Length: 142
Ligand SMILES: [Zn+2]
Image 1 (spheres, rainbow, N blue to C red):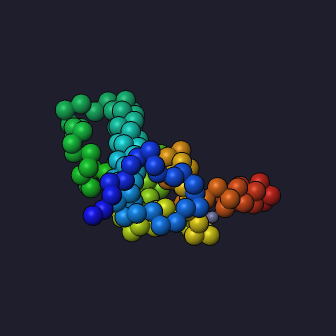
Image 2 (cartoon, rainbow, N blue to C red; image 1 turned 90 degrees about the vertical axis):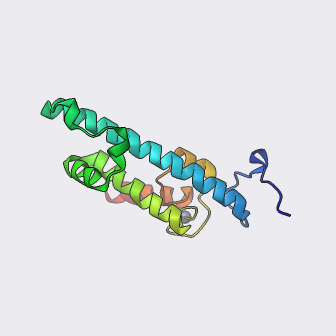
């Protein structure tokens, strides 16, 4: 019989291996929710900006439920520029990685990124070591 994972028992060590499947399932749900919320926040900010910019009648805009509609997301993200659009892309990517089970590992060195770091930076693909290396490179070649 499987033991119920205890939230308090979960280690935050970025190097830990052998996370039980149940725990990974819980974490997958948790982080999917974090990413959904983040996407929703960006989308509703963007929608507000759009409304202000275009003075569109509020009735012409889909309500919160329709934010999930692909067409709407596409046309909206088409209008998004710079940082927001970049961040939305990263969120989509992170959600895909979450579905594939790649989300927890560093893209460069395959180390565990760690739940603590992922909570702080849910769209990161790099562990802290690789991130620092990358920033160092960026500074060096800036
Ligand atoms: Zn790494």
